[in-house]
Image (cartoon, rainbow, N blue to C red):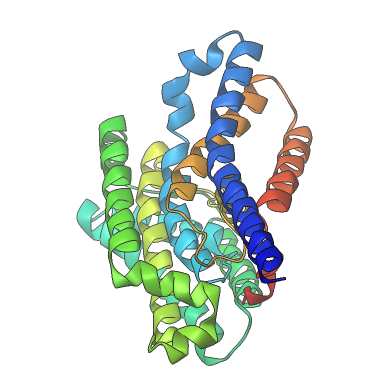
Length: 320
């Protein structure tokens, strides 16, 4: 009897290891296959326009890192688009005085909205998705009000910062710092522990409320910096500034293999692979001439497929 139990346990572990390997490899394989498919279908235009394709990935990749930290804890954030829009307006206003002040102002604006989310989530005990949906609509209203008469324009100096070298360097620095913090410090360990089980994390000595508060604040600050990268592309902000960013981030992370419930199975590579896969998929469909409605339909189907593959059904209840 004991031998049968041991064999069953060993078989279960092998199956789990196999599924983990598949989940790790599938997003990378998907990225390569999707790129090759669209490059073939568009007659090589995907390769020829690679710089244009990659120019769209910086904002999503930077902002995704903050949401990645939140989702690792088992939380959600649907206010990222509004954070980007408000922070972009702040960057535009302050750029009239000084670019460095504009960058810091954007970061501060994002951090402030992150704090508002954190306060109601952590101290008022309202579910994260409810809080962030409310602030999404609240600050989307502010964006529309501030841009009612005309787009908010920034300084003419902003255009000089719109270089691939600057955007790539900023993105790499943020990703490297985030990777080191997540992989090699207690910060990442505590995030995964909270995602795996908040009560157990509390018994282990982790100050979960304080961690959640500062992670939401950090996420807002990161998106506030992404606002600078967003603004230098066009030099202004319209009423649609940051629109749908939260959806793009969620799709990108799931496409990268991010478990919706967070926890120990989360990998930092989810950000990079997912962001690239989303941009390649979106750009490829656009190059093929699909309408916005059809593009959203296809992306929705792909999103559902990946959610079905990567969802940990035993841990979905930890989403807060």
